Image (tube, rainbow, N blue to C red):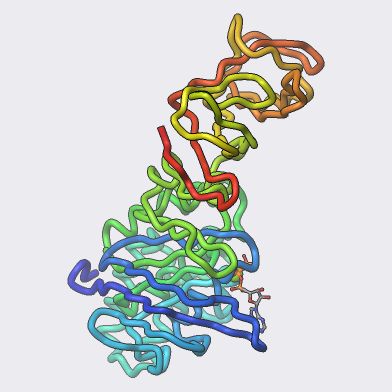
Length: 354
Ligand SMILES: Nc1ncnc2c1ncn2[C@@H]1O[C@H](COP(=O)(O)OP(=O)(O)OP(=O)(O)O)[C@@H](O)[C@H]1O
Ligand SMILES: [Mg+2]
């Protein structure tokens, strides 16, 4: 399959979508590099599918510009945009073989039979279904069917591949397998890919860069590493991580930030501040801040706890399994200063991340 030569970057400029006078996407500007795998992540209803559908041409734009490569495409028909899309409901034709499902679009486009056969075989090989071409969809597993849907998309050798929650119908193990397959597929074919999900694990594992959307606005567009380690605001901080980051309303004065009288860290800032600490960075220690264990879940590989400080502040913790701690006990915790995040208490924007 021809690779990088086919990739085209996507440039969105002040892209807008309004439904019945309600702005769903008020104006979005972003550059998705050629060959890059972008994951659009955000809560339900934030505009992910709307954004993808505008790139695909399935939704009209209310304003702004979409460039694919050097072409302005927002007024061009979907089939002429050089892209292919994979949906959550992949709707294969049940009466057709795998080969005919994969090659259907080529047939409609009038591609000659010999070329069709060879492109179908290549696309099927890419998704490891080379030996399944004669099967009917009903004779395949859920993951194999989803791979047929992907083969059907890549057989057209698109410059851009769009995915809208393609793995949501699969069970946990299959999703894991498909993540690995999509990742290696992307390395092999190199098409610019845009993948919509509300699953942060999919986003963290698949993306070159994650575009975090809330209410149609970009919250952060960055590498998975920076999204986790340097969240731009409290929305991103609270959205990524499981359990999510603790966000504590704290007060900074006289060179220290504290919560309800308990000192957390030295700081130059003063006034109200939101302090963030990830559950996995809080340690249960011999001495430190005394906390009451309100709730505990043992997950095998690790456990999570909800603890309460003497001043009533609750915190979520995730710990490697060590000493068995029962709910209802008192323990001590240490919150490492270098793991703290600071956010503007009013706007939620990051002040600095240690
Ligand atoms: N055809 C439509 N008419 C009116 N409002 C719409 C239409 N399509 C979507 N919306 C609204 O636009 C907003 C964004 O919808 P969209 O489908 O893009 O969300 P999403 O992020 O993909 O959510 P999900 O994760 O649930 O799929 C929602 O508030 C939705 O109700
Ligand atoms: Mg959607």
